[in-house]
Image (tube, rainbow, N blue to C red; front, side, top):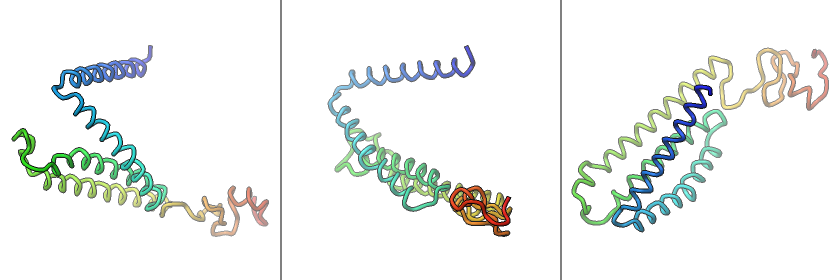
Length: 175
């Protein structure tokens, strides 16, 4: 058996054990219906609101290269807000004084600011690398080697690359 297979089965077994532990903790909970209701609400909020919103924003606001970074940041930020929000908007004093021992509103703002700073940093690093590699922008345009970029336009010497030949036939002066 390969090392990867051993690792995969080991992690899978650990996951099954943790699911069993979680199930046992929910069953022994004094209010299992409340826990089930919380899980159902989290599922609806995540799959019905957070995930579609993240996908739509990533699709509409940024280029293809930065989409993953923005979606990752929105997923982290949305998850943190969804976990923290019930404690922040609950009316009255918490039933357990240790439930809110810290200023969660301020700490949530700090975490969201950190997510934003890391996201901006990742975007800057990716843009710098793309510029250094000659791929500035979200999609490559005409190349400097005379071949077409991903948009099918010819390079500096007027020759079309593969994308140009496929859609326009042989180009005069080409290969």
